[in-house]
Image (cartoon, rainbow, N blue to C red; front, side, top):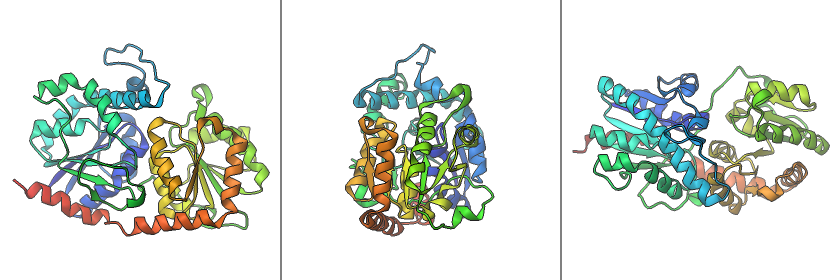
Length: 382
């Protein structure tokens, strides 16, 4: 069986699909993962074959329409969700010619797309093969789907459709107690981290005498001439956390880490495999990214979440309702407030117990190797 996985334009969209794609290869199936040109090294870095489908990057779709005209980023959460679906749809449209070319030569039997990989249902419909929607994280996607359908109106009409085709299978990696409501039957799958690796140093997998706090703002932090709010956030937090007396590890891409090491002191800063580091941490402070949140949950580590995008907020609050996280809104997005919350969690065992219960829940879900059988069954059906 040939399975085409379609990721997005960020590392998280690759890491979320990697466990199932790897399990399918290990079961003897042929696998290719398609994504933006920028993501091909990330795909090959996790040991999977990669095909680029567009040279454009996130800003090209986020900030511009199909004709290249500027598109303002909305300020209200509802409008942001609609906008997110729209720019992911623009990425899908830009990717379809290359996906058509790949499919004409390679003939996939099944297409697996990430949560917002809208090229997947369009391509599968053209090919007449089953389509699987694979959740990247625990986000709620209905509002983003509506934005995508508005943007994709010409493509849907050309295919004789009025809405995005429903998937033949929906794989949800959310633990049951924090799972969003879906209008589709789900195939649950255990979350297993799929992040990139590096040569380990002993401190990365051992715990010292002091409480350890991990601080991260994702894999797209920029510094230098491209400095962004995430970089500024990390720099301010390093200075604030020094007062807690904890060991601070800042997990950041090397491009940003170089600047942070020059501008701050008192922290370990650089790219660290989060799946290795997480079990040694007392709390993980992050931007709300779903892959980061689920990696922390998988390790049974409490979290302080400061959602940096509207589509991260609902999942973050469900984790907080479960007892294993604290969510701070933009009005509380100040280094001192965040550091105080992290210090409180370190000293309160109830957060660790709730996080550990969530990890146990994840451990009881079906493994990716088991879910491969569901993919095989799809292709056996007429």
